[in-house]
Length: 169
Image (cartoon, rainbow, N blue to C red):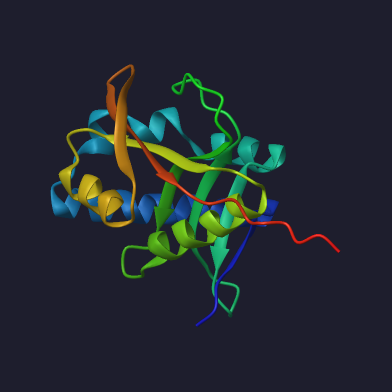
């Protein structure tokens, strides 16, 4: 199956938010209380995703039938990082629980970052969420620091990538 990374359209936002609610339920069933402990759905309601889509920061990964299987907010800057390395910052990555969408999204965003000449893909994850820590480690993200926002205690993670070499004519 082939997957396409693209910027989200306005009509994608309700689908993305439904996917977030689906993931929230899955986390509750698995005993992962991260979103409940940090009031995730109160801090990042539907309107947050609508605003990020309008700014061009909301991305989706679709399958060959145009179904959204993963989504994330992508920025060129993040105030939790105090250097100026060329990087893409991934926030609020969500995928359908029964698919491998997050893994495919990370691969496609790495390709996208490489095309933009970035040297890193960066994100953070809640320090206490061990399954997520293992997931990101499996995908090549190493812990390089810590961050804190309100009730959220996070670990800064990055993956180094080689920029795409430009071929001169």
